[in-house]
Amino acid sequence: MSRTLIVYYSRKGENYWNGSIKNLEKGNTEIVAEMIADLTGGDLFEMDTVKTYPADYYACIDEAKEELRRKDRPELKTYPESLDGYDTIFVGYPNWWGTMPMAMFTFLEHYDLSGKKIIPFCTMKEAEWAEVKEI
Ligand SMILES: Cc1cc2nc3c(=O)[nH]c(=O)nc-3n(C[C@H](O)[C@H](O)[C@H](O)COP(=O)(O)O)c2cc1C
Image (cartoon, rainbow, N blue to C red; front, side, top):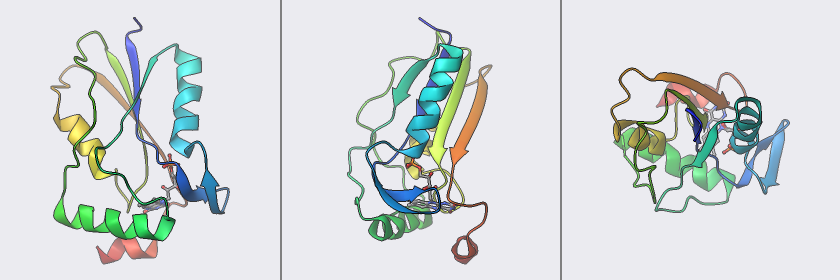
């Protein structure tokens, strides 16, 4: 087993890709996670939520905004049983309203990450959204 884990969340369906909305068969963050796995030889773990987010981009935007307001912790389908064997953990996620999808907080709060090297990476549409300031 590798001592490096790449955990990521990535949403298929309508999303921004190269400046416009496309229907993605593979999410942007998943593509980057796989590149990191190739480079590091690390193990990949894709997080998945019990709830299904809308494939429609704008419906998903609204739902994620409400989750952020409520500080939700969406339930995950599965977790790695233990992170004990890993000393480096890449944490990958799409920028959702200027922060991580709430489900990534669910994951991180599930474990004691003391002493581990955490390397976040993030994909996004652009650096700043006017709407983020309204939350
Ligand atoms: C719910 C939601 C919220 C988003 N919020 C932002 C944002 O605040 N800033 C931004 O630049 N992009 C935002 N985006 C665009 C995504 O971060 C971007 O398309 C990302 O690469 C998607 O990654 P994925 O395909 O791995 O899910 C948002 C997308 C969604 C679906």
